[in-house]
Amino acid sequence: MPTHGVTRKVAEFTAGLRYEDLPAPVIEKARVCLLDYFGYAMYGCRATPINILFQTLADGGPCTVVGRTQTVSPLAAAFVNGAMGHVAEMDDTHRLSMAHLGDSVIPVVLAVAEATGADARRLIQAMVAGYDVAARAGEAVMPSHYYRGWHPSGSVNTLGTAAAAGNLLGLSVEQMQHALGVAGTQITGNFAHMPERGMVKDFNPGRAAFSGLLAARLAQNGFTGATDFMENPMGLALFGERVHEAAFLDRLGSHFKILEVSHKVYAACRHIHSAIDAALEINARQRPAADAVETVEVASWSHLAKLCDDPEPWRDAWYGPRFSTQFNVAVALVHGEPAVQAMFDQNQILRMLDDARVREIVPKIRVTVDRSMDDQFPTLWPARVTLVLKDGQRVSVRKDLARGEPEVPVGYDDIVRKFRQLGDLEGMPGEIQTGLIEAARRLPDVPVKEVTRLLRWNPPEREEAAHGRVAERAASPH
Image 1 (tube, rainbow, N blue to C red):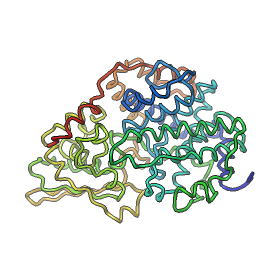
Image 2 (cartoon, rainbow, N blue to C red):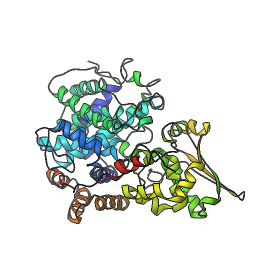
Image 3 (tube, one colour):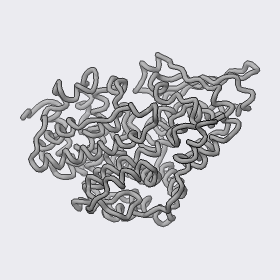
Image 4 (cartoon, rainbow, N blue to C red):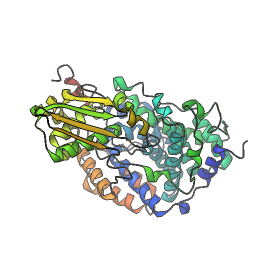
């Protein structure tokens, strides 16, 4: 077994990380990520893909599935809760790895802690380790990994969840090397689903949670894998043009990647957020009348155009609006920030899809590729929105990073407001909301079982408006 090399160093860091090693800002960031996850997971807990996964995977066990009273095995809980985090497009994001880390890592640490009785200090240390390994693995193979069609929330998250589970299970350094190798052989998740907006989008981070936890448990019981997966030419190197080993080693153990995570303030694919911010600035300067608009150009990097250039947001259920640059920019230009932020509510999405001014502007919006922005991605996620009016006026605004990035931060109170907004929409009683907010704020001085008890609150059945009624508009959207 190699006793040096990248995988060994990552395993030493991951197996050895303890709560006492974490600076106060890292612990505070973990609290924010947990509360953010509680909100967006609860809001997605009754979505159709999640219902199907739960019905398929539900078994017996001690672990909580968010929004359900029935408990299941750790593997089933990790899978369903992992998919749940991604379904509503409100999840945290690490831009350099292009992964939604919390979707997969948080379900794993909740499941393992609940099953083993680990306290919240160990949960937080494992969570930080998982975020770190997934983020570094993503950076190591970006951007070619993404351009080849891999879905990082399903692929590199698998390594992060193995690291998180392994830390919480108390794996030795050697066992952790095996866990990373077993996780690596399970890496999956691609973007083939995007043209059809398939439910498998949400499957991917759930599978990453399942696979990483499985890898750690197998390694704990003596199962072996490649102990040099990160540097092996038949390992991680298969998932990109090359492996940038410096991404793993740069300040490993002294700089924690969880601090680089951003939080969404709009319910849309993160790629669109810079364009939304630019459109909101134009709206704040001069709210354009829909019939006065000649054209709107949204210039950005090529992958935004590939994934989110959708002039027909009326199709594909709730995935359509959330992956349509045209729709989100139109709402921002016409109605401004309150309307955009209100689209956490599926019924607000329906109202905006029916809005005459939004419908008039959507066909006027063109998404174009600026090759200079390709060169800046993923360090920046830039977008430039240019509004041209029929009287010849022209307004152009560029945003290099969206709100919620560490450089354009939102605070804990912003996440609390987002959580309460989602809780209200889901019908969550105020005392449950307050209980989860206070539990997150007080961590690690709260028992994990108290957190999971609150997460088992069972929301009332509601019509999944955007999954049902949006599709009815597809035949005659205009």
